[in-house]
Amino acid sequence: MTSTALPTTDDLRALARARLRTIGVRVTEGEDLPARTPVTGEHLFGLRAATEDDVEEALAAARAAFLTWRTTPAPRRGDVVRRLGELLREHKGDLADLVTVEAGKIRSEALGEVQEMIDICDFAVGLSRQLYGRTIASERPGHRLAETWHPLGVVGVISAFNFPVAVWSWNTAVALVCGDTVVWKPSELTPLTALACHHLLARAAEETGAPGDVHRLLLGGRAVGELLVDDPRVALVSATGSTRMGRAVGPRVAARFGRSLLELGGNNAAIVAPSADLDLAVQSIVFAAAGTAGQRCTTLRRLIVHRDVADALVERLTAVYGRLPVGSPFDGTTLVGPLISTAALDALHAALDRVLAEGGKVLAGGNRRLAEEAPAAAYTEPVLVRVDRQTDVVREETFAPILYVLTYDTLDEAIALHNDVPQGLSSSIFTQDQREAEIFLSAAGSDCGIANVNIGTSGAEIGGAFGGEKDTGGGRESGSDAWKAYMRAATTTVNYSGTLTLAQGVSFL
Ligand code: UN1
Image (cartoon, rainbow, N blue to C red):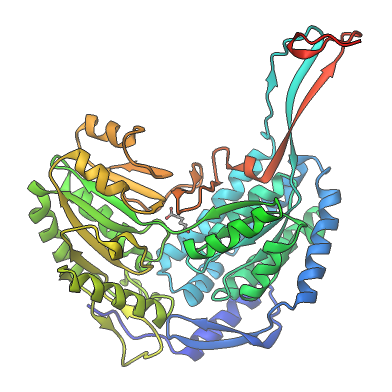
């Protein structure tokens, strides 16, 4: 099924300009950074990328702003985030349109992405009154032992195209209340949403009396990112992207004893047990595998199904895959918009070729769509493939809507297959058997940072910490106590006894 006609690139350009204007952004056009839209695959405007001097200036400014921001009371720092949340609510629809133009998300998911920003702002405002440290029982009389949390410095946020604004907001809302300042390098594929969010935050800062340089935006490609990675003024580099990117960033930041927070590739699986409610499983699986055209870090990429229910589940999935509406993300009936680029489509086809050569069998989908109407765009039917083994290609993350179906006989075997990939982001099990669910969630179960029961792998709420293990990089962002990555703890001992008592019973002098 294909939805109605695509908008033209002229329409999309006009829409982007109109939304930017409503938000109040003045775009500085340039030559070196093309803004494209995956909806038609075509060029929208040229923008100006940051130069080395721009990076230097932004880092100096963010560092200078940190010196006042770090001693601003945290609840006052929350004011700027509260105001940002209000502005995001006011411009929710405008921002969602920009997300659709730039990242190709369908309306509901684009609105959801903006909502995710609003949610983290609410969370961070509350957090601004809860940066709790502990007091610890001292072994010495008349002593107080405590831990105090202090801001880190400048946080460099490097974000990916697939959540062009939500992941930025997780980092920025939390970093700001923690007393850090932020320098943001968004994906070079999504500069317009970045300009819009930066503008709203700058306005929030101005209206609440925060230093304007609490947040700086640097548009550009890899070279800009590398300058942030290597600069000792950047206390924390929070980077979202591929495992390959993380392998380059992590050691470089560590070499200068900086901190990094990495949110890298996932190869998320769901186990479907014999007792699973298959209606619930099918709905969850299709959203997790085909939603966002398979371009979430949390996208479901492997389905590990008990042999007894495999045929029934595959039959239902095949039927749903066969009628998934692929097309313009502006069409209200579309569920699958474009991939970000034809390179992503090539990666999908390359993975498919490999898996078919190894004996895999396409169950549904996989055809390119709208190639004549929009040759530069990358529309595809999500593809469902049956495989009999977890070969190298299945163990890799292909950032596109391809779902591999494997079968199992025992839960132990399912969990072993589940964990036998380099990545460890998100996971789920569909079962009505509480014992199985608990085993999956136990230390002997899923090895991922996110483990779900009777819900798919994607679509986490901001209240929990987000991130994963192994090649996913180990970082935690967003809710829970992820804020601790944006601060440093000082252990303090105060002696109010009037005499000196040494710890561990040591006597001296
Ligand atoms: C990502 O894909 O990088 O859990 C983030 C989810 C979203 C965030 C995904 N809330 O799918």
